[in-house]
Length: 273
Image 1 (tube, rainbow, N blue to C red):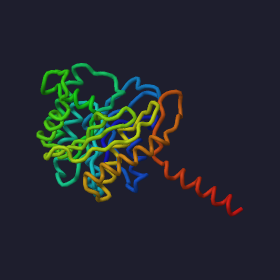
Image 2 (tube, one colour; image 1 turned 90 degrees about the vertical axis):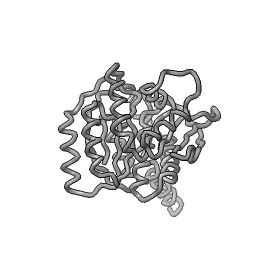
Image 3 (cartoon, one colour; image 1 turned 90 degrees about the horizontal axis):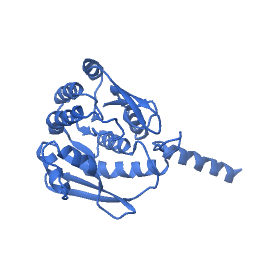
Image 4 (cartoon, helix red, strand yellow; image 1 turned 180 degrees about the horizontal axis):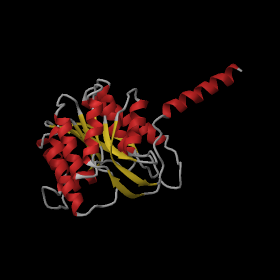
C-alpha cells in the first residue's frame, strides 16, 4: 500500500509506484494524499486531499485485504502525516518504506519546516527503510541542528537511525564523477556501499522508482540489504531505458524488461522466418 501524490504525468508518486509494483510482481494499493498539476518539465501546483479522506481510503482497504508492505511518499500536509502515522502504528509488523521528499515540489516556506518536523517525530520512528538523497538528508538535519559547511553525512545518517529508523539508504554519496554512490546505514553503521554508472540526462521519477522497488522486494520476501541492492539494479535499468515522452525530463521505463523480451521475440521470429 502506497501513500502519496497523484501525478498526471506518471513520473512520480502513486502512478510511478503502481507501475514499479506491477513490474516486480506485486499488486499495489494506493492512498492519494494530494493531486499534482504539472507536466514533464515542472510541477506547477498541488491540491491537498483532506486528511480524513486519506485515512478513509486506507482504512477501508485494510479491512478488506492483507497488506505486506507500506510505502509513504510525499504526504503534503501535517494532518496527513498524523493520520498515516496512526494507521501504520496499528500494523507494526508490516515494513514501512519512507521516501518523503519530492524535490520538484513547490517550496512551502515555514509550512515545509513544520512538515519535516512532523515526519521526523511521527513517521521516522516507525520506519523500516528510509530513502534520502545526501542533499535531502542535510535539509532534514537542519530541523535538529544548525546548517554546517562540514561533511555531516555520517553523523546525520546515524541520527536518523537513533530516531528509530531501522535502515537509511542515502543516495548521491561521494564517489567518482562517472558514478552514483548509494550508502545503506543501520544501527551498526554502514551496511553496504554501492556504486553505479551515472546515466547522463535529466530524469523525473528515479527516486520514486527506487523506493517503490525496495518496497516491492520486501513484499517479495527479501531482507533489507538484498532488497536495496536489487532495487538499485532495477532502477538503473529503468533509468537507462528512460523515455522522453514530453518536452521536459525523461521518465524511467519501469517495464524495460517487457520491451526487451518483445524485441527478443521479434528477433527470434526474424531468424526463424
